[in-house]
Amino acid sequence: MQTRPQPHKAGPSGRVTPRLLAVVALTLAVVVAGCRNEPADTLPALGADITQTSTSGISSGAYMAGQFQIAHSQIVVGAAVIAGGPYGCAESLFADMMPGPGTTFLNLSKAINGCMLNALQLWGVPNPRLLADRVRNLAQQDRIDGIEHLVRDRIYLFSGREDRTVVQPIVTAAAEFYRELGLPMENLQYVRDKPAGHAFVTEDKGDACERSGKPYIVDCDYDQAGALLTHIYGPLKPRSASPGGSYREFDQRPFTRDLGGDHGLSDFGVVYVPPACQGGGCRVHIAFHGCAQNRAAVGDVFVTDTGFARWADTNRFVVLYPQTASAAFNPQGCWDWWGYTGREYLTRAGPQIEAVHRMLRRLGSPRVSS
Image (cartoon, rainbow, N blue to C red):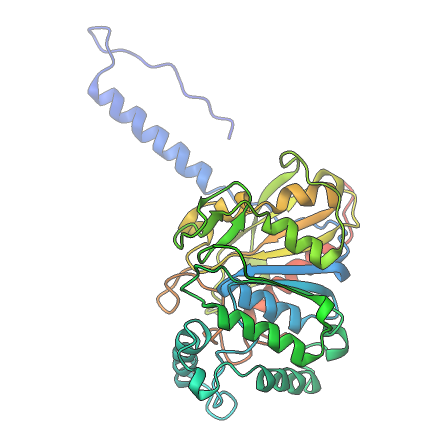
């Protein structure tokens, strides 16, 4: 915006009048509103190597990290499940027989009681072996990528000792689920000795370690971003002292326009691009926020304080932070792990999985010379 304010004219007494103050205030409000309505950037084509993609997430984002990894295991090399359970845990046994809103309601009840609080263990929920069989069936139907890709992945799991939102047996069930699928023990790292609440854990950012509450980031003297990236990719170069790249807001709507009105995604997301990734060839890490942790709820804290950018700078990662939106059917802005976007939510055809995959393909597109 190039318009500059004109000099003020004082009233007859040489002072600024109340009327003039009101006009100035209104003008400033219009200018600020105009700046806020400027369109976000498009997601850049960076020529990224999307065959070396990884995912991570906390809570509903943990479930989505696993769902995206399993749906696209041909290009995803690993996932970090933080305070989340096994893939498909909330899906009702009646999902294929009784599609529709009734199944979604059953799924939500199962999600809360069986896949967070572990209150359905007497009824065999979660059942890692049954869920692994579900994955094999979906792969045979070509609704997700083949198991032969999945068993090579590296998985990081985390459960805080003070987490009462997603209790530790649920995360343990996720570890058992991956073993049922045939992942070798050395490919799994399960961290459960930290006194953390329900939150993403950092070395020096956030609330007290044991706390569970917005913005769901806690200081436990533990660099979780570095730990999970190191497990997935192997030894990394030391992180930078501070982020040297750019956080770019981008318009998510081009990736959701034909997915229906209930896809649950926000209009805007964020991508972090290190200087070294401007020329192409970088890997991509997708970081999924948790419930009540999107930008509308906590601002940019999950984007800036989780620590991924400093590792991205020195190890050639682009970090994608897709964003959900709150709605009447999803007031906390959770990722879809119980089917509110439709019965395909676990598969490549799931609206959220498809939208994020489109974003990933965009990052992998060849750079356009200016």
